[in-house]
Length: 320
Image 1 (tube, rainbow, N blue to C red):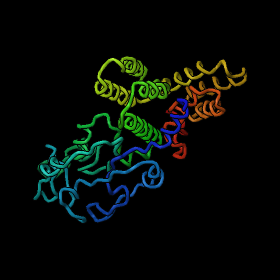
Image 2 (image 1 turned 30 degrees about the horizontal axis):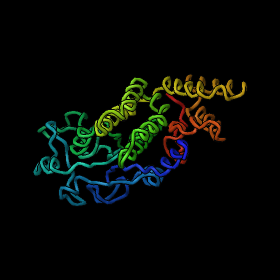
Image 3 (image 1 turned 90 degrees about the vertical axis):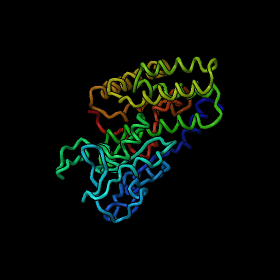
Image 4 (image 1 turned 120 degrees about the vertical axis):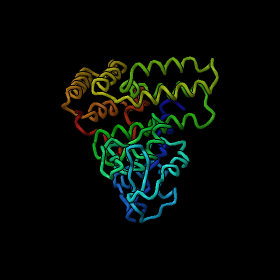
């Protein structure tokens, strides 16, 4: 099977494993006995991922409904009345493993990751700089793991960035989940060239050096090194300029195979994107169209053309 064909088969079956606060999937585990179902997660993203739901407050034995909890200035998780301290129980919970991302409940003293109120001994809010106790443990243990709360996923750009990283992490996990050979890593790295260039060109080159040495060092050393560099690269935001440079790199690879009108149109669309006049979906769609006839196998195999299922309708916002 060709590299392009193998890539298409593998990518089509990739299903990220994503941790999620149970209430966001509609489970009635909130303090009031209700839920906070997020339709983007359940209706749009849900068909393409395997959820790993978790409610740390239920896991430490609190029921639903229950007394609300608060985060103190010294990072303790206490009941609103101040009678119970659940910090030790929360710290004893097992942390997830084998995930490609995590969506936390916003504003939760257990799961929130941004702007959680921290209370002083007087019972008054001291500031809004806290992070949920369980979320803090997960993020500290897995600092490169794509993690957001459902509130921030209402932002089209953040939603796209999170989804792209989740699917990239899933493909990497899939690669290393079984017996792999250096040629498999070479193929994976080649398929992700444009995507890595759009995020972090220096780390793309560093990853390439790891791939080049894969046959001469222990496999576990290669895997650990490549995983760290790849994940760190994908954690770097893909700026408009780096995206445009990646698009121009693709043009440089295929330009000779295009007629003058197509070359001129593609360059114009890339520059329009660079200026912020067009969304990224426009030049990418043109590249995908050119690759669809099978005569540009290198381009057709690039994860950059479809880093997540097209049905999610991302990449259509005009870049900031």
